[in-house]
Length: 536
Image (tube, rainbow, N blue to C red; front, top):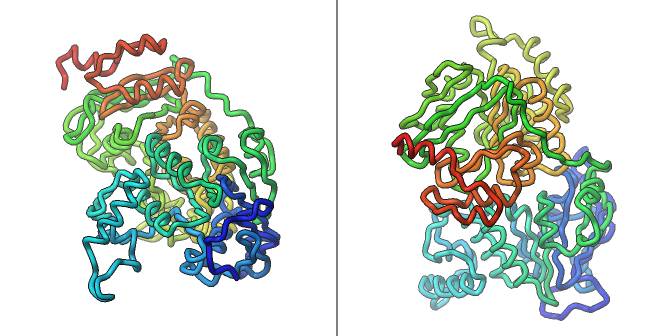
C-alpha cells in the first residue's frame, strides 16, 4: 500500500489507474468493471449522463466508499484507500460539487481546518494561519481575502476557497466535480489558468463537467462512462463534441441548429415596459409573442433573474407596466402571476421548485391542487394520480411510478417534474431560469426538445441561460442585458456569441463606436428610447 507521494512517476505507467472496479448498493449495480487511467501531466475529462456512475467512482477514489472488487494504483503501486483523510495523505484531493465549508469561519480557517498551526502544541497561532493562507492564495492568484468570513462571499469565491483548500494538501491527483457550475466566463478562465499551472510532470487532474465547450478548452483526453460501465477514452483534439455526446447517450443526437425566428404575425402575449427596481433594474422593456422562445443573455449580475423575479412579483417593483394580452395587470405576489397563467421555474429547483421529500404526484399537482384536485378540503387522489401519470408519460419522466420520492430522481427528471407542475396549472407563459444547469448532455437534449414542443403548442417561453451556445440554439430572439438594462434585442439571424458578448459587456453610458469595428449596430435601442423620453 502506498503511503508516500514523493516518488516521481514511472514514465511507462499511468499516474493513477483504475482496473476492474465494481460497486453495488442494495438493488443497484452502480459500477461494473470500471476502468480509467490518468497520465502524469494531463487533464482527463470524465463525462457521462446523470446516474452514469461518475460520482460513485470519485467517492471510491476519495475514500468515501470502498469498492466491492477491483484495484486502484498510483505510479504502478496498488492502493487501498481507507478513508477521505487517507486519500489526501496519498495525494488525492477532490473538490466536490456541493461545498464543504463552514460559513461562519474565515477563508484561512476553512482552508486549514483541522490542520491549524499552533503555538506550544496548544494555542492557535492565528497570525501564522493568516500568513500561510495569504501565501497560498497569492501563489494560486486567487481573488480572496484570508480574513473574510466565508458565509459573506459569493458562490464563485466560495468555490475558490474549496480549490485553495484542496491544493493546500499539495496533491498529486486533483479531482474536480463540476467546478464551474457557479462561475461566469471570466471566473472560468481564472480557474482554467489555475489548472494549467497546477498540471506538472508529476501531477494530473480529473475534470468532471457537463459543459462540452469547457472540456474542449481544458482537457487533453476524455473518458466516457455510461450506465456504470466504461465506454471509451479518446483524444479531445481529434474527437468532435457530437461523437463524445453520442458515446455518452448511446445514440447520435440531432444537430443543434437554432430556430429561424418567430413570425411577426404572432400575437404579442406579454409586454413589459420601463420595469425598474430600487436595487438594479432600470427601464427594462421587451415583448413576448405566442409560441416564442425569448432568450435572456448577460453576465452574472446583469439583471436577468431579477427581471424574471420582478415580473412574477417575487421582488418589489418601483416603476413599469406589465401588459398581458393587451390589458395591464398588477403582479404584487407570485400567486398573482400564477393566476394570470405565468409560471416561474427557478434556477434553484431543489430549493424553490420542488418538495424533494414528497412524491412525483404531489409535486406535479401542487400548483393546481386547490383549483383542480380538491373539494371541500378533500383531495381527489384518483384525479391527481391520473394527471401526474399523464405528464410522466408525455414529458418522458423516468420514474418507477408517480409514488416515487422526487429527491431520488436525476436532475433532468426533477426539472421535468417542475415543468409538469406548471403545465398542470395550464400556464401560457413559462419562465425558465437556467433550465439545464447541473444536468447531463442527454437530459439537456430532452429539455431542449420539450421546450420546442411547448413553443409549437403555443406556449410562450422566457429562457434565461448563462451558456451562449444554448441561448443561440434555442432562442427566436435574444434580449441582452448589462447592469440592469436591456442593451440590445437580437433576432435569431443576427445573434452570434460575438454580438451577444459585445452587448453583454456594454456599460449603459459607454460610447459604443467600437461596435462598428465588429460589424454591429451601435444603437442601444432600449436605453436610447428611454433617454429620449426623459426616463431614468
